[in-house]
Length: 408
Image (cartoon, rainbow, N blue to C red; front, side):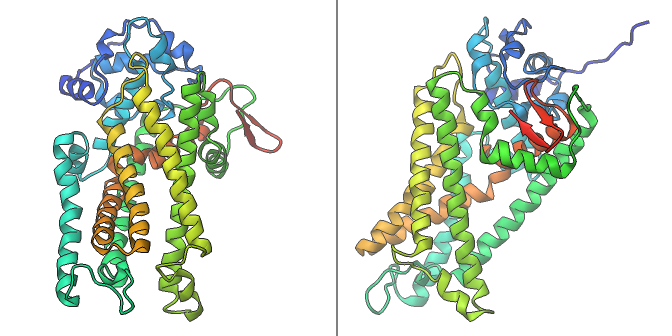
């Protein structure tokens, strides 16, 4: 006797899913072309065919705990080959957008991140915080654009790191880390309840350490799976742009870490202090690395923005999450470059205002990270590690048992 399964569709979820990028999901008639075409889909329970039917039925719990939405790298091949124009790739992107909103609390931030109508709130919070600091400091030093005694612009005179910038961003970093920790826990709990181990012949189960090392080495640093999704010049540009942008962030993160460690460590170990003293001359190695990072960011952003603008709407449609992220990173990058140029040229009003916008945009990039598309740096990496650990890999991948190196 067959077992009856009760299905309870969540129609509101379907409506929300269509609003964040899954507008064409109802066109799907389950031909399975998408799963056959995908170079990343495993042989067992391949995606995105099953996600299409789950989405049509509004099976919210299945979808939000589905590891496969993170394994997809959104190359768009499935959407390009879909005979009905259902855009499976856009559906998986929309599901990730939905997950950003609901994976971790406070859920209100996820709601704000989902629509441009809430952008004034997202920008208004840091604008008010840094404007308040600016006004208080201006009253204390007697000028909105304070200069040093020798007439130079030093942003620390207006926004002192010790008791404004560093404590504020330190608290933001702790908040984001806690949210990501909770998000990762929720993800793994969902995977454990919904994803079974899948081992193919010749695959030796790795340890958690093996899975983490392989994922960072191949998927993060080398972008190996991105490269597996290349079948056109536009796809190559996407991979290149993404990788260049990633290393631009790495360079800037290294610079920030050096400055912070040298500054605060210098209070205990005096010889460290000069290493991170700002503003730095252009020939300083840390400043050179910072400017290299800026060049990488501009290059990567240019490639990715051009791809978005020139993308074939039959293959993929950009949504608000895409443009919000690109927009914020553009503002962070351009205001950072502008703040340096205006400081060196001595244009105080433009310099301080540009630096103010730089702080606002950095806050928007970091503070809302667990609910933005950039959160995939953590969430997708977690899913890729878990997938390697349980053996849910594309059929072309295997583990060489002798030296435990993943070959892609």
